[in-house]
Length: 567
Image 1: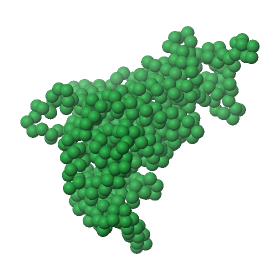
Image 2: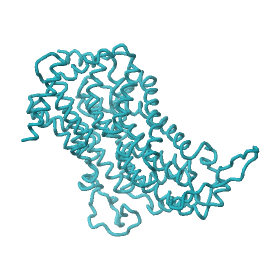
Image 3: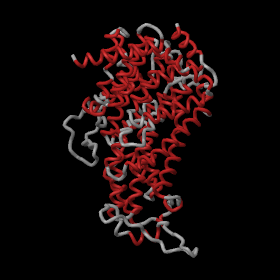
Image 4: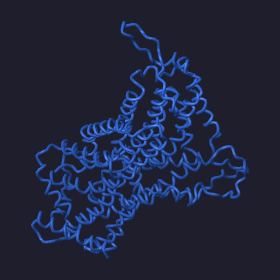
């Protein structure tokens, strides 16, 4: 009873404050504001699990008369939920048959073991995998591979000290202007690293993986949960805006990811490895040290352990390519997509493709048809005969092990909050309070939104932060007569830049747990990555984003929404 009493007192206080500000009797706006505040406090403080906090609108909205219980329940399962389920089916197949490990090792083998190229190689494969898998799963998969390479570097560091001193660029000048003898900085006796340079390589490679996972998640609409939250909330708020799909998002975000990848690599190289890119990035075999050659051999041995590519890997790769092509060609925009072949329009979405291919993975046998040979297991090299020759590519258990149900409920809670803000009129009220900002140019409004979101997300979860800010920024854009995409897309991308602290996102925590980096390292490197991200996103939204989304005009679909909301 005390809990309900406290909630009633807080509700009364919020309603009274709202009424004083609005100079109107208590209405649905105040009730919705109370629910929004309570949910946001739970999300930011994490006093309860994020998924549990997302259920607050499910019982408070019906109690306060904002939405019916059936209406709230409908918000917790949307088109993006089915899209995510199909993607998880493909991700489960990729991880079960070690296709992700084969891709990662192959890309690192191509890059080589020179520190600079090794970091770039790991970043490229992490970005690619994070486009399709979750950032957390990608980091958890790539870090053990990187750790094996780092341990190989460390274990051979003492024996290779003399040779490394002769090949690494540690030449300095003394006071007379002559070249001094190259020397090697040693770590303290209690350190597990032979030299300070070895420690710096470990820091650089570890941090590069978590940053690359974040960058890769920006590229596709399914790359991270915040992209899905934006897509669903935007399509719900502006149902007539047929501008956000897999293709348009990819065209906009892919150049951002490429620029961020290169600049982040340069920044980490400068911070931890110095400015001599010629030595650390050279592909010449004559410049390789014993450690680097042993590291390449270690990576090659890990790749050989996978054995020849198996039939399930081929099937998974075909499904991967097919899903991507069907997403791109559904409604490309510049030419008619495959949906134009159907009589009824608007029935098929990216989720249709995702669920269809995901369902087929439960049907297709993992053994090659008409083959009597024993099936190779996911680890590669096993010759045990499968007890079930009709075993499918994935099982329901494989799917459940990867399905992030907490994220599904969290996203649903965000949709419920957005629906409440729309029905109650709270979003319109917020927009009216922001009218004094009408004198600012659009790029300034977008920049302020990006800086605010990227700062808050360092201390709060990314999905929770975006869920709170999307309705506010939508109302602000409508009030200022700015194309809503001008503020919503940059804010959606910047909410992923919580990279300065271990608590910023799960990939940061995974990398931090390996013990190579300290919080000070993450703050120093993360600040630069955060700044790079904001600047690149601002560059994109003011250049190629303008013709892609027609950002110079206030669109008709936003005008219709604004008029309806005002009524």
